[in-house]
Length: 186
Image (cartoon, rainbow, N blue to C red):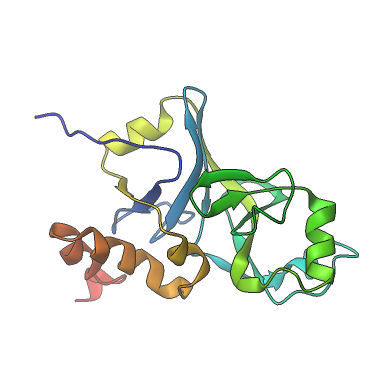
């Protein structure tokens, strides 16, 4: 029997608990693009030891940490936020979650304390899939699709996101969420 799944822009991709790829082990990826050209997203639960002002010269000091968005183009900075009404040229991915926007306006908002750390998440690099690649990974069972929720991105501790998204899917996913990270030690 063929396993059915539906992927949409704005979904979460939750890595299956036994994923061996270190870039994606126990991660949740928020999809910002999904179409015939492939997919783009950002790992929302891999905090780095940097702040944005550590990585960009002349950026105002800001308490929001930077996250590892994925292994593609790790020389780039991206951002998801809830400030679409204040940040020109933002792209609304789903209700309440925006991607990018005018960087000079962002700098102004940060410098004037018009955007708070809980309203924005910065990423180094992104996660990307060529046409058909994500679908193949889905057939192999590498990912579990879950609906988006801004709270996971902006209001939840990183260490809790993977487990919480699975628990909220219910049924068998609650059981999967309980599988320990070092399951071979049990």
